[in-house]
Length: 244
Image (tube, rainbow, N blue to C red; front, side, top):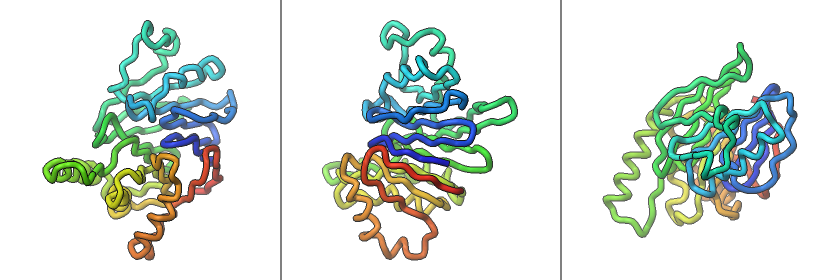
């Protein structure tokens, strides 16, 4: 598969027969093969994860389906979304399972998790592979928050991580946010302690990709015996060809 980083939490995966576009809000989307089906995912309504411009893709790509978190409220009048596009939108709620079809005999199973911020996280099963996009599901612990807030956050995050216990994930897109200061690593590390992951693509690092190398350095002892590959990201448009 080919993976392209589009900026912030936005990624494009190209499979043999389809594309998956996650949480696009800025940057250049590569030209896609019109013969392949396109699935566009938006994990929640925040402007750094959802941009209504995604609907403009329909002008060029008719074989497209939009999978939007249920907190994204659409109306034709407000968003300028044509009826034929509305028919290709699936609204998904947390803690549910959905089926989507690439072809009549080729399906994707989607399980949604409940974000600790807003919307959902996506856990997708396709062609015997498992892909996870966290959206804003993260351990959002902050120095400025109360002990009660941070304890509640930790409990809610651990509840969602329990759903991933011992799950074999091939590709995971996961927040690593430098704004959390000394707590920046906790969500990522908890996920790595919970699931068995081949490749992790850090995201949501606010134009500070150096946080990735910092994580590798700071948590080197924890990562020594891990088989997980933490991918380095340097710039928008960077891509990888990965065999999984």
